Image (cartoon, rainbow, N blue to C red):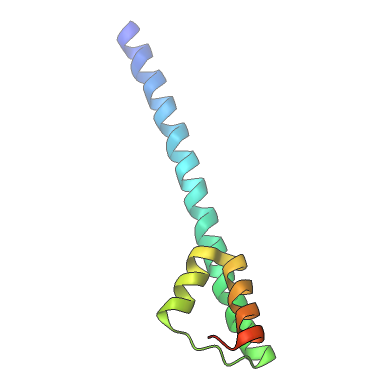
Length: 81
């Protein structure tokens, strides 16, 4: 009886931890996709001519929305990208 209760408790903890991990991963994926969409729309609407290099895509994928805004600001101020 005690072994079954311990296994049930361990399964509840594992399910809870997996839920937390997947919730974080989904948030990161959505943020990355939104960052890339913002970069694409800014390129299309504002005509910034930002090249889609591996560095720009990496910044937007890791930084998400904030990364896209940083790339756009750097392009407007310095023409770096």
